[in-house]
Image (cartoon, rainbow, N blue to C red; front, side):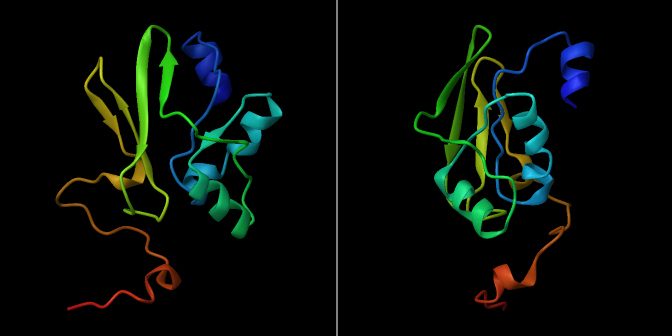
Amino acid sequence: MIQWINDGLHVKIKAVVPTHFHDDSLGGLQAFHNKKIPSYSYSKTIELAKENHFTVPQIVLMTYYFKVGHEETVTKFFGEGHTKDNVVGYFPGEKILFGGCLLKELEASKGYLVMPMFQHVQYR
């Protein structure tokens, strides 16, 4: 992905923000670190990454606003969703919300659910 972004889109990656601690978000993080690309994440994501032995994001998100080119983005934790740490990214200039695994189509299945995470959930 890094090569495609650099060579295909002709842009330089300045940072990466994993949206949650699962492997589909943190799985390639080490490749960014190897290229000296810093990673920012919600404190809970860092905590859960350590507990689950994943590559750990480097910097705790202290600010939720990032400059991307001439645009400002907002990264925010609204509460537990797909995971206990799921953040979303919003691009106000484009009116685009990136929710990662948090957002789904109405007809979508629940997807991959790890049962130990839901052991305290009572189903009706």
